[in-house]
Structures are given as C-alpha cells and as structure tokens.
Length: 260
Picture: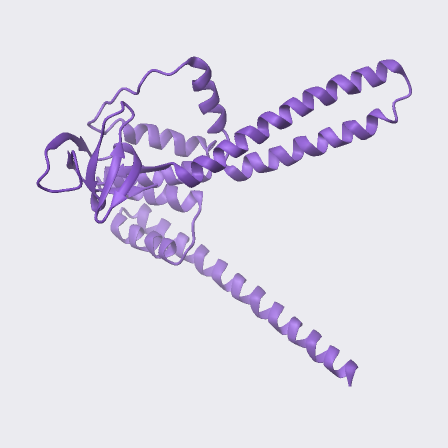
C-alpha cells in the first residue's frame, strides 16, 4: 500500500512538473511571437500597433530591457517624449550599462524643454553616485557574494602557506579583499535602501503647473514640462509631492507624472 502511495505521489509530481514546464514554454513562445509581431509593426512605421502589443506584454506582467527599450523607441516615433523617456529610464534601471539605452535616453532628453541645473555636489559624492549606478541590486548582490567567497578562499589558503613571504602576501591580499567586500556590501545596502525608499518619476504631459499644496486652488509654484525627471516625495489622495534636482518642491496631480 505504501509503495502505491509513493508511486501515485511521484506520478503527481511528474505531471505537475510537465504542466509547469509546458506552460512556461507556451508563455515564452507567446512573448517571443508578440515581440516579433510588434517589431514588424515598428518596421512598417505602424507605431501605435507596436505600442499596443508592447503594452499587452507589460499588462501581462512581462518586463525586460528589450521591451522597455522598444516601447521607448515607439513612443519617441509618435512624439510622446514623456512616455519615451519613461520607458528608456525603466530599461536603464534594469540594465544600467546598456549603451544603446543610454544613447537613446540622452538623445531623448535633448528634446525636453526644462534645463534645470542640479545643486552642486562634492566630487567624492559624484564618484559614489557613479559607482552606485554601475550595477543593479542583483549585480551588487552577486559581486558582494563573489568578494566574500574570495576573502574566505584567501583565509583558507593562508593556513596552508609554506613560507613567511607567502603568508604576508596572502595576508595583505586578504585585507584588500576584505576592504573591497565591505565597500561592495555598503554599496549594496545603499542601493537596496534607495530602491525601496527613493522613487523617481517622469512628467508625461506637455506642461504642468506645480502647486504649493495639494489643492487646485492653491498658489502656482512653477511650471514644468514633458520629459522632466523628478523625485516623488509624498502623495495625498490624487496628488503627489515632487522635488526637482535644484531643490524646488511642489505638488502635482498624479496623472501628470509616471513612476519609473
């Protein structure tokens, strides 16, 4: 009787695995077919149709650098600069080192109206920010694990060193690796914290009048335009508080900006 139960259980697991694998393959095939069809529409300059297919993939939960990049290109072609920049930024968030994405994003920003100068930063802070932007959270996680493993390997090798010279060499190498590991860990912690707390958005309408408070009748603070990148500070009902790189703050209706 016990053998029969085990056989049934193994059979159930086999069927379940088979169904999951087939469903995954079917979903992957559908994604590839949809991406291919959208690409055909793009090449025929039928950008609206391409956008509809790309949006269907997004609505079904599929995301990726290529999808965001192609969607950004399609929006750019129909003159929707805000949505183009939004999707380029999303692609860059997934793949920070992608040169094609960075090139198209920089080119799209040239078409924006607002030229806001950021507050001056100390050069060390600029280096730190550049280092942070080099990898995604996953990238820094893998690097941190790698440096930790290399440090442990050096610790083990140290005890098998045969000469004083070898021990000193491994000791200094281990200290250097420990420093690199701690730096990588610090960057990972900061990156995770920013991903969870700091939110950025893109203005997706041609012109927006920013208010001093979340009320249509409040005083006008300043005007911003399509494609501008802002920090999303807070939200209240249908309003969101934004902050510009020059330190200005104000409130706009949620429909005027989209989160990256």
